Amino acid sequence: MSQLGLDTPTEERTRRRRRRGGWRSALAVLIALTVIVGGLGGALYVGASFLGSRLNSPAADYEGTGSGTVQVEVEPGETATDIAATLQEAGVVRSAEAFAEVAADDDRSVGIQPGFYALREEMSARSALDLLLEPASRLETNVAVPEGSRLSEIVTLVAQNTRFTKKAVTEALGKGGNNKALGLPPYAGGDPEGYLFPATYPVDPGTSEEELAAAMVARFTQAADGLELEERARRLGITPGEAVVIASLVEGEARLDKDYAKVARVVYNRLEAGMALQFDSTVNYALDADKERVRQDDLEVDSPYNTYLHTGLPPGPINSPGEAAMEAALSPAEGDWLYFVTVDLEKGTTKFATSYDEFLELKRELAANRG
Image 1 (cartoon, helix red, strand yellow):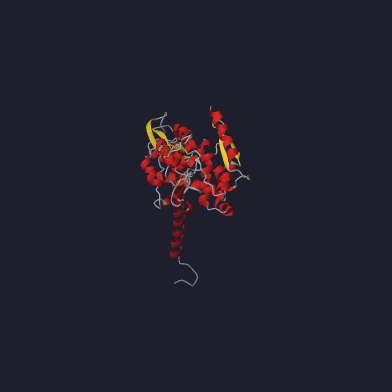
Image 2 (spheres, helix red, strand yellow):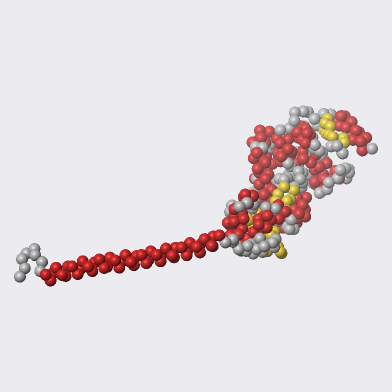
């Protein structure tokens, strides 16, 4: 029999065994942890060694400049990583990593331009980067449209310098409301003549006929907006479309830029006086010709564009005027000239007259210079 608060010998032995058992368990756990930590350390060492060897080894790459031809597109906004993936997929480089590493080490890589490129199969990453930075590798054709070009001439020019056919370009341009995608201004009346702005346009394998035509119209709109064409035409008492027609007449008649504003003034003065313009450029347009001298029978061609037969402006532009001609049409020089004659065709020297007698004198000067 035990008293309250006192242990019996049996109970004391039991508790001692538990104490000894607790020390043994703690020791076992400590030994186990030591083994685990040691094993983990070894695993970490082996893993780090493996990863280090992977990081230090060069990315898989081809040697040399490759062979064959591969067309690759670099899209706007792509990073070097994006381009690397494209090159690997196309079989240009062996690994995207190799190209990414080369690009990261070369500051010139930020200069890679969007577009299509002619590369080669199985190139080294360095060779691929060099070709992407070489302008000659770009699969791009430039179409230069000169000032004063007619629609028919632009169609021919595009067909000669691109993969497009005349038929396809003509269909892309359309007329009479079938070309809304071009973005022509309302005052063009659906006719692209005069609204394909003279400039140089890049054409790559991804460009369509419609996109090229729309780019030409967009460039016209940009120039017209910059010149405030609509507002300035209104202040002159003419429509924006009439301003473009006058600009095309200036482009077709003046030989030198310095004469543009004077020729524009002659147009306004003759219109105000109710006189026929009598411009050879309009007859040539009606004939779809480019004659230096028009004959008497040419002056009788039945066309609304023949300004020898019809007073006022022709119904539309006769060519694509440049920005200088458009500016002249909106800001004609001050003067009372009614006539002008290019008296020296080689130098482009043009003289202006206020009377018919002076005009005849200038014609005699031209005849003398012709010999």
